[in-house]
Image 1 (tube, one colour):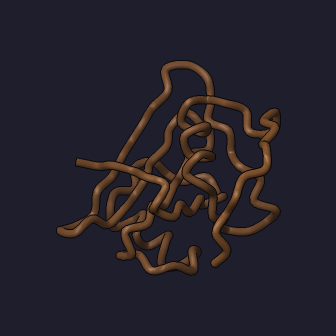
Image 2 (image 1 turned 90 degrees about the vertical axis):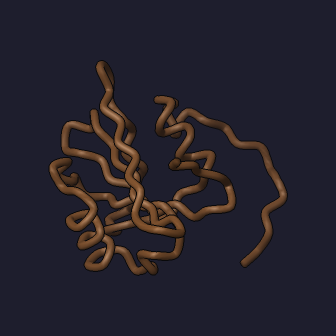
Image 3 (image 1 turned 45 degrees about the vertical axis):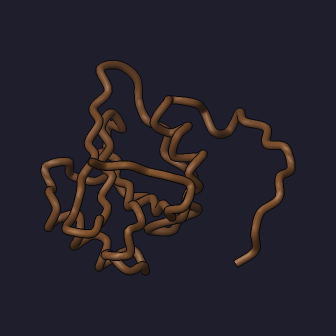
Amino acid sequence: MVSFSSQQRYFFYSHATDMRKGFAGLSGLVRQHIDHELMSGDVFIFINRRRDRIKLLMWDVTGFALYYKQLERGTFERPDSAGQAAMEISWSDLVMLLEGIEMKSICRRKRYQKVG
């Protein structure tokens, strides 16, 4: 079973991804473009060019798991990556991304964040 939590780290690949890619293809993108250990248990996020499909790749204890969602209407918002190939996003950002909430219109209140 694929489950996501605030304890994991989330890495968003900023370029459009061919959704025909499976475990091997997406793993190759992580190795080439995202400077993070593939088998860390963290989640890697990919969106297609039309932004109506998303894949989340993660390593669990026994192998890779893949979450795939296709929208019937609308698009996913692509976070602003400032020209980087990949960027880390928070668990709350991922939830908003999947739910279709526009992140630019969100006003966040101050909260404690553990440094490091």
